[in-house]
Amino acid sequence: MSIRIAVGQFHDLTDDRLRFAKQIGASGIQMNNPTLPGDAMWQLEDVRALVEQVEAAGLKFEAIENVPTHFYHKVMLGLDGRDEQIENYQSTMRAVARAGIPVLGYHFMPNSVWSTSRTAETRGGATARQFDMAVVEANADNLDQLRSFMPTTLGRASSMPLFGKDGPTVSEEAMWENYRYFIDAILPVAEEEGLRLALHPDDPPVPMLGGVARLFYKPENFRKAYEVANQSTAWALDLCLGCCSEMFGGASNVAEMIDFFAPRGALAYIHFRDVQGSVPNFTECFIGDGNFDPAEVITQLARHGFDGFLLDDHVPKMDGDSDWNHRGRAHAIGYMQGLVRMAAHSGTLK
Image (spheres, rainbow, N blue to C red):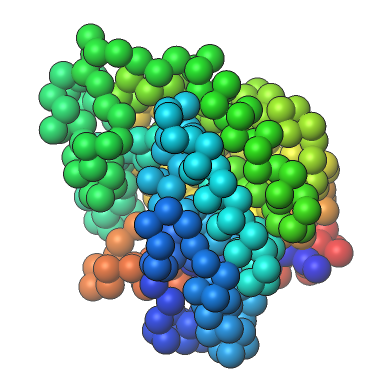
């Protein structure tokens, strides 16, 4: 199986999404935190219904990325009740695998992705997400403002950990202990079920936000996580190139992550996006306008034998675009298709 393109980053599977995928020439679908019944876990029949809908459209269901954060926030924070959440997570893993979905993506950010603006201008006046650590620091004790930097539902949720600059903290050491506990519990289930677990980098990639440490903000910590998992083939990355490009050092992190993990077969799939700038201040942008050279990256992936799928992920909002940014996504997907064709024509992609 060679490099291919999927359409994703939506919660609800609609005829519009499926038709878009077919019309744009994608081969598969990925869903992000699909809207399904269940307050603590998902059931096989509900997940399987999604798979059947995708397959009926002539597409492959490539992966689910993320369950609701409240399914396992006690696990991430080491709170009472985490063992029950782990049991439920294991049940969800079995449902996903037995429904015929080969990859389950996850993150380890209890208070999730932060953005200080969602309307920053990029090329031609298109709008895009931005993060500026100076804005966070200027509002360090304004918890209402800090919550506004998180996704809407998480920002409103008082259960999500958030502390002012003088409040308590959750240390990086504690977060590593929680990650080990989680992986030790779920990896055997993944191996038994033939399911790949795909870890997403932290976004933004900074050591701490809102008093909660982050783990996956620099390349060496991913290598540490790989060792925590004993290099299991069930452990892999959802390699968000944008997050790697956001890290201090910019494009060099993208190359470093691919060079280490791709030859080991530890890349499940790729979020193919980029940013201008890097921490502490960056803005998302169109592919080709950012820190790394997209042609170099696709050549690097192909040279190392990557055989997963590419995904557009976040995209700028163009004039007249939909809520889901159909126009921005069409640009990104077309760009990726051209890159893959280029690699195949040059002989890099076998």
